[in-house]
Amino acid sequence: RSVIRRYGIADLRAGRTPEPVFEFGVDDHIGAIAVARDQGLLFGASWDTESVYVWDFEGRLRETKAPDELRALGLGIDRRADRTGLAVQDWKVVRGELFASGLLPRDAPDSPIVRSRLLIFPNRLAAPHDVRAIELPPGPGVELGREGMAVADGFLHFIPSDLGPANQYFRIPFVK
Image 1 (tube, rainbow, N blue to C red):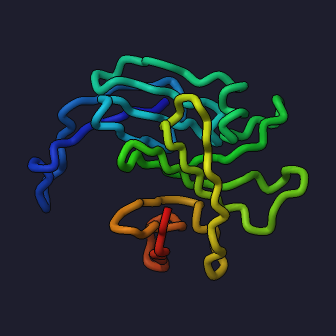
Image 2 (cartoon, helix red, strand yellow):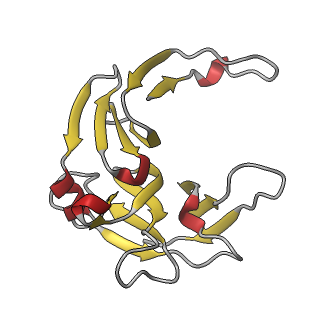
Image 3 (cartoon, rainbow, N blue to C red):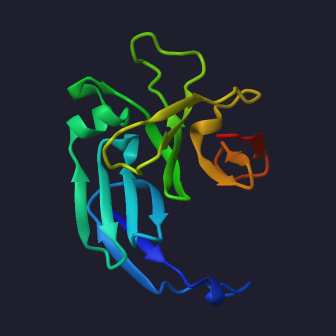
């Protein structure tokens, strides 16, 4: 079970515990959220992207992507259904496009040495599915698509490890 919360930026203050402005529960482990402000939508990816959900800003479920749709999008790992797409670790909506970073499964047939990928969905997750896939360069001993990602100012930004004292930050120029 997950709880999705919205916080007001103006309410975030050093030394104070933030209070959510709004929250709703989901009966799944949601590992990535993308916000499409212009449409008032949230895109949620479950663990290993076995499911993808679309909610409105009031927490109402608008759509759940079926496994065959996820397969067509190149998303999700479900070994029972022989689906070996990208396990989304983070995703963002930028200028109407959905950018998804993550990992291909390690045990897939013809598993690549570098498993990190960036998928760009020009129509978010709507048809037509003109998905652009980019292999991310290897980081020193780490897969860049393993954790957090941002797209800003002509760069892809990655924090590929869990936060801690030995964490690294990578910035890669990005030209579409």
